[in-house]
Length: 280
Image (tube, rainbow, N blue to C red):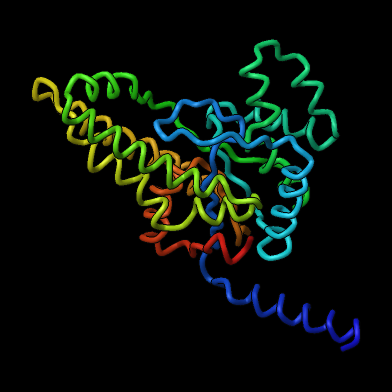
């Protein structure tokens, strides 16, 4: 088979793939991720993966190249503070000019510096946006305070609930770390974004957090309601920032948010959700 013929087949396949997407809805590539800088704040404890290694950087290039060639987003939405749009995009402007270090070099606190140098927004979303020739990143996160520290305290005060929580957290950590142990970063993402994997995350709020009810004040139910409210506000921030000519959007959020977002997109007739394994 000649090289020219192979190229022709690849071109035809690309055209067919692109037209398999909806033409009358906005196509959504929702990528749930672990936090690259691994702050350790979540109940699920993921093993460490150094995103700055040569192999990880090569994997990020492969992933973003695949997204560009198969999906090409018109807009990119990230889990950053909605009220600090200017800060985010000023950082992105420096990134576009290969001057991002001018910002990160000014950060003195190691934990914060690691967030900006290793975080998924900067390592993946900025990289993808630059390759897609996108000039603006769209933050969506809300400022609702989530008192997981109080939830943990109340869980620990009840031996039965504590035991259920520890079992669930252990189960979720084991499942997540099986994904994290994949050799290729793209396989990590494909694994983390399986519907069953995302449902485990969502199930924690329903099966455990919602039961925490000290003094009949329904603390757990209120926290779960706030969790859904936070995600609904983030979803509204996506809906209200979509531009008129946009056909494809890419959303990068933690897997906990992705679990809820998937439910929203599946029930919103305005969107067509694309599976991660179709693109990566």
